[in-house]
Amino acid sequence: MRDAFSNLGHDAYSCDLLERDHERHLCADVVEAIKSQSWDMLILHPPCTALAVSGNRWYGTGMPRNNERLSSIDWTMDLWYLALESSQRVALENPVGVLPVKPSQYIQPWQFGHGETKKTGLWLHGLPLLEPTNVVEGREQRVWRMPPSSERQRLRSQTYIGIADAMAAQWGGL
Image (cartoon, rainbow, N blue to C red; front, side):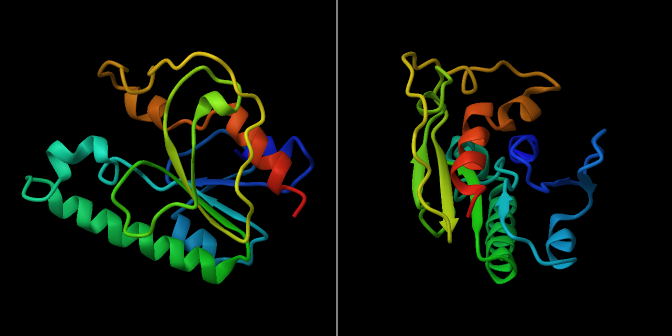
């Protein structure tokens, strides 16, 4: 996402608790980063492990990790409201899940040049709906069928380049 906006000349940064070898990466708590200055736009990618409906067998009502889901919902909603106070343009991206506020729209990678399915919700404030840029054939469920591995969580959470490019092109000039 950062690179898609930077490639169009925007002063874009990523933020994560994990170190990244990039001069435009903030290794910080996202809440503290948002509070640190004013932002023209915020695009949020909160952790989805406990929020996604695909985790209902572990995090659903009555399941052993349900308290983690409830905490994750509270944290994500607090992040959303903080972002709304901090910027006139905010997007939050997360898969089909359990957040109490419905997304503004759902998108799929195959609408942006990738022949895969991964239904993703976008919660938007001050931003228009994202328009498909390159609808392609193919509906492979690569992400859903990914086998267990040490890299699985990182690979499943990556933003597709076509989606990032569409956001940068459609929202970058606002």
